[in-house]
Image (tube, rainbow, N blue to C red):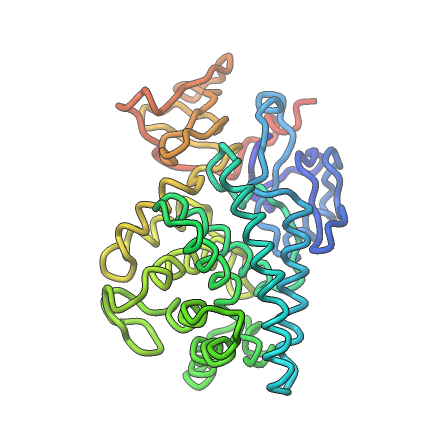
Length: 369
């Protein structure tokens, strides 16, 4: 299978991986022939990248970071909780969050088990889901990224559980932000941005007095927008004034935000998101956290077409754990000419590097059936 931009898929190409909704229902089966109308609908729904069948890469196996059932159940649990938090009663806030914390702790335990058992780097781009509410899917994605970072940094089990709970609830304060502001397609006004920024303190206030929620979890909501140089909000904390969990969530939150489709811009690919983190490493983001992230997450997802520094072109066929920037590549072209496909391991070919990526491929390669 190949990973391509939805807008570049040729009419008649075959879908390589099924597309689901938040309820786990299949919206489009693997093998479906992509017509112009379907491709247009997928783009309208914010699905920027899809996997298509391709004879040169059909034996390349995509491994989900977590099971589809786990993802559906997690998003439903997060969504049910956040929707109830929108109620005005302070008693209901406390009751809902205290009750949900127990469910979230169990969920985090399962997520940690799945992440530890997986031999693959974390790749959420392979989970092709259509989401009705960005905040719910974002909360789950940030949790997965944060846990992957925490595992890479060898945090003890209790801290990983607290980090996971803080990640799930880091944006709960946004339930107090009007939907028209959260979903605004254009630039926010200064007043609207101040309303958005209030979600960090609102989340802290919602969580700080919940008996079943450790105080550090409330500080995750409070600190995930703080930055190493003091340029963040709401308190302008600097360096190690920001708790490690806040620094981890700052990286996970930004990466998922830029690699997810939003109403005001399309999603970046993972390697483009990593460049955002690199550009702020040490100034905005903790450099050690960024490095742990790089080792834990698939920067070049399986199925992505890449151009190597020597001019050869191919498709990422497998990951090398701990070396996200040096995957296995199936070479398909040399000097612009098709060749018999063969595997090249960038882990052992250190003189080569990935020069660029391409999600717009020649249509005949994808439709050669």
